[in-house]
Length: 83
Image 1 (tube, rainbow, N blue to C red):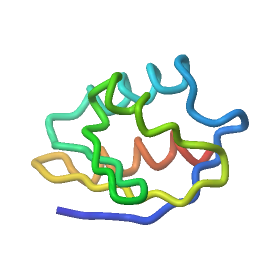
Image 2 (cartoon, helix red, strand yellow):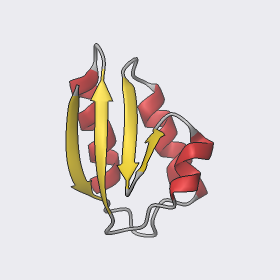
Image 3 (cartoon, rainbow, N blue to C red):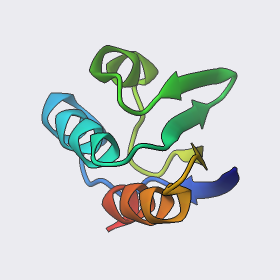
């Protein structure tokens, strides 16, 4: 398991379209991927869960990946959320 704190750098925050893209990125990997925001821990492969987080640009979150391809999964999710 690896975890990394990041600052979200998605210009308009994570509304429906960016969340759908994030779920697609996360879905490419077999590892479990979670996003922690405040006291909430949500499966990054769940579109409804991710929408409920209401993550904004500049927000500090933690990304957790656990599984066979966790390093690749972490890099892909972090890259999406910070570029």
